[in-house]
Length: 157
Ligand code: FES
Image (cartoon, rainbow, N blue to C red; front, side, top):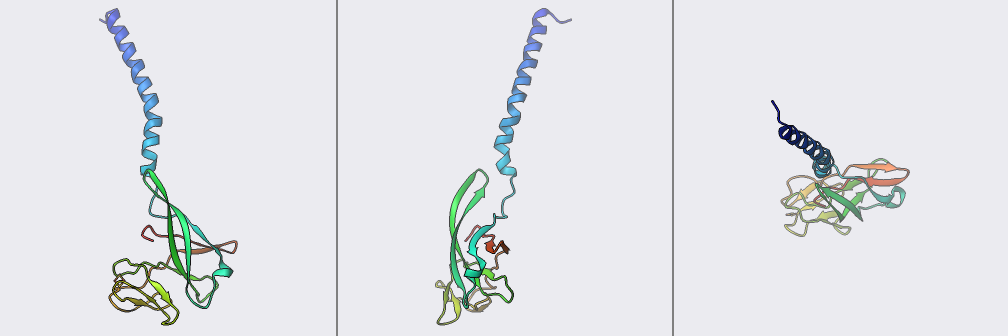
């Protein structure tokens, strides 16, 4: 049999529990949402009017984007090479050398991307042709929205 004191203690404990649960749901949601957010697939970034970026040779295009990792979001600068493609959509190559990650530079004189670190060389469409790089330059996802060339940059750019 409950005494009056025990009944009041149980009632107060129940009210405390309700208050704790009411506060816990939004707090947990706030804390866990960034961890559950999908990462890895970067947002699309506009490089500019596609017609203006088409040229006879690879062209360096600088851009900024917001990189989100868990609780943090930071503004990051990067660049990519827009390369004339076979169709109306150009190729966009990552400048990151596939050997050890240095940034390659286009040489119009040699008609090659040159890596300053260990002498790697790539053709205009990114094929590795000399030096230690084990594979071609990465091609970035590309789309054209209302005439604007869009890419999905990678975190290491
Ligand atoms: S990092 Fe480019 S050749 Fe080594």
